[in-house]
Image (tube, rainbow, N blue to C red):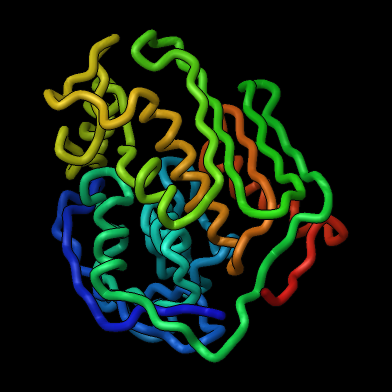
Length: 286
């Protein structure tokens, strides 16, 4: 059956690009309503934005969703991964700014918040999107590809390649359950290179970025004193991102996702290709 959170719960954190404190409130929502963001700082039609693949309006640095009235919410992927992995189908997220707070750069804080709120079962069956045949897309120029495959369950695989020896070639695979997500993936942090962060800040971005909410790499060294949380944390974080992006299908996912050097743009393009190939999937009730 569908689930929502048991009670309202609030949190706050810094926006990675704005550098401003962002406040959010998670609220229970009715069955079949899905995950909806409500911009409390906006008015009229711009306020409500449903977390769906078709509402993705930008993927250059993160996943951004928006509506036809100009309302937007950015950096939704970590939160959406936590919401999905924790089994939440319906929730209203009130937010007073354009970006979800970065917290510690992972999904761990959001998992803790949802667990603290608790969940309740609702009187409606879950809708499941089942992959029936392979869907694949690629960016051959940049060596990137992603695909969806039929599978009895939900699994994810991500491989990455970087010319920096501190990262190198890494891969991670996960059979998704709430427990496995919390233990193996939720604490994996976003990462970046010092020179890129400095350049972003010169252009008024990444004002809230720091060693407190990202793994920062200088040449071939990790600048964070505490080091890594997992030996392949970079691949695990990319897999976390993929879970958040695939969660935007608006239903439970039954299939397998595989990505090589994939990112938000390719993940969303894959979903769009899948929905265009109407014989590659079906919606069933769980």
